[in-house]
Image 1: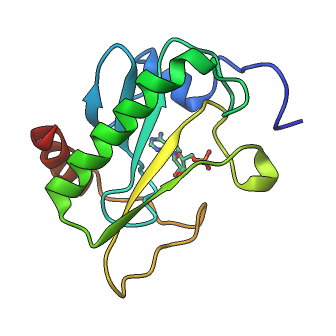
Image 2 (image 1 turned 135 degrees about the horizontal axis):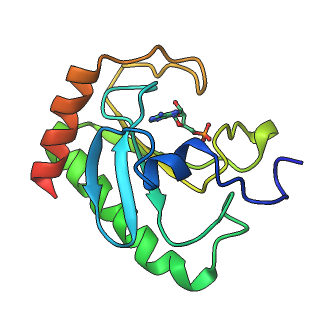
Length: 144
Ligand code: AMP
């Protein structure tokens, strides 16, 4: 079952939170960590993951933690839009494998959108260049 089940402590984002895997960080505090998606669907594709809860998806997350977490999602979205000046942005969030979820630690995607620029499909994007992602992460961090 991908929608229900036990939280797997060995998922990629748990490892990133523990510092066992690297990430290209844009923001971090005691509530959340934001970093660049290394397979971005578009320029500036950023992930925001919560700390302090073993939540596979939206259903598992303690209700009282949504306020602080979503406030960080909004703050990061403001910084992404200030840094990259897109024409719009999307917030995406997938629950369960059939819905497109591939990493089973709750996360929100922030994806800037520009007029007439198509996105790569979810799960079909190419691996981005780390130096490019680092430049974007620095710009987002500076706008926080
Ligand atoms: P989802 O498919 O909604 O679970 O989103 C997981 C996202 O994590 C995908 O967009 C992947 O491209 C992204 N991803 C996978 N591994 C990493 C990683 N090591 N660092 C950053 N992003 C990753």
